[in-house]
Length: 233
Image 1 (tube, rainbow, N blue to C red):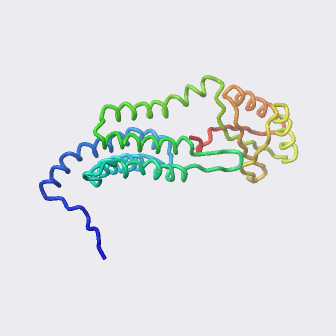
Image 2 (image 1 turned 45 degrees about the horizontal axis):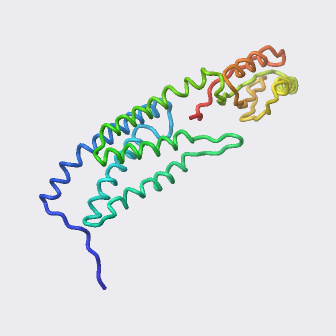
Image 3 (image 1 turned 180 degrees about the horizontal axis):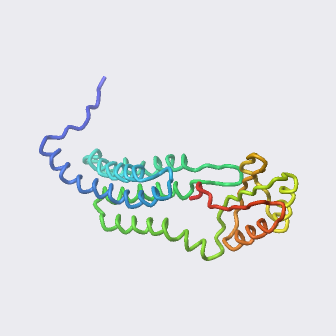
């Protein structure tokens, strides 16, 4: 039975490969860190280390693809599987809970970071830098522009507190019915004599402001607070 042994590289070949790859790997780490710092600032699961490792791994696979192919014409076989592998990794970041789908932006970020790593692995440093800056800008500023434009719908968590649960729920339902919104309770508990209910609503910035004013104006609620959903991308 014949056994195919691994490709053997001489010491000179290994030294040459090492010198040519160090810059590419370091550049990949730097590009991944640019995106990872933005994700880390938002406390996302795919943070600084994750994006650095994904970007560097994609760069290394891209370089090894050509080396392992040798004289074969198919030098992109290993690199082509990066897209599929990152697809599975990104799918693990997507979470569907009730009427919400979370993690789509994080999954897309991981996918693009892998592409940036492949560009670094191919020695396309300028293209990789431009792509990383575009991703950083999109993650940092586009969401703010969408929220300020007024047409972007985003979820917010509302917490309503009151001493009379029946009256409080009746007031909440009355406000939501006028706005044609459905009550989706996230949590309900009792703190001392106060009944507390937390629910999520997805609407534009102007509509969130209106809902908060209407809920606060209700005599059934002792206090109403609203804050951004931390799980939102």
